[in-house]
Length: 304
Image (tube, rainbow, N blue to C red; front, top):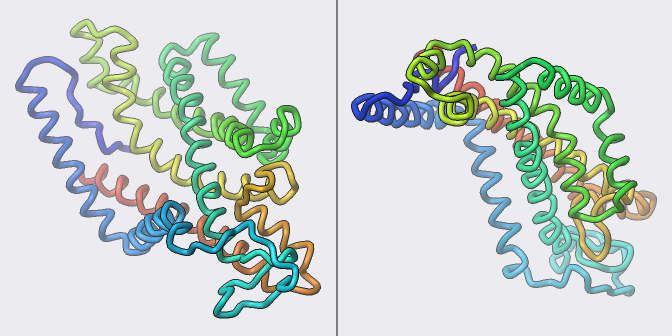
């Protein structure tokens, strides 16, 4: 597989720096053009931006208190007053969906960021130096990778205790071995590339090569991987919250709402539709954006 930034030159002279910057600008421009032609990915990205805005400013626009209870309006079907109906305590489901969207969106982003902070530096060092460091890191990642995702996350939460913060940590640890494997494979390939050999020739040290030459070239792959893992993060957070090991009351996420609706399926089936559909669509959004990024980066690499 070729890479979008493979044309980055090693530090050598002001002329080469200028040429490298010009090439980076050209590559970025062509990438944006190709991604904008991915209509499905573009629509998904717009939808994600809108959802982010709803999570941030939605509670101030739709001012119904998501925690306000009205036992006289328990399990009320959708209406003008309550667009998604009410739950078994008479709380407005639409308001709870809006308030829960912030946690549902932020948890996977924090988790993937944590996974990157753990997996990428480990992969850079293990892949570049190899030897016993690579052997130990790879075996440890394989051991974590062999454990089913949800079971690993549940074990971490069970040991530390259920909370929103712990869920983010658990999902982040879950992401780390997946990111490590992808990043390590890229490092093993790029460490033998001509521009890395040129950097060694002019006297660049290992860590300068890793962070100034190799890391920028694996970033496109990591961005694609991270975007796809965001969808997995949504599913894991929802599953943990569904089993009572994730977000705890009075906070709410879409997984919590799905769990509450599960207890009332016989009397209020409509309660399960908004969180269930929203979780499914959000996962599809991340997958579609990831596919669009992968396709755009792949085209740019082949043409570059």
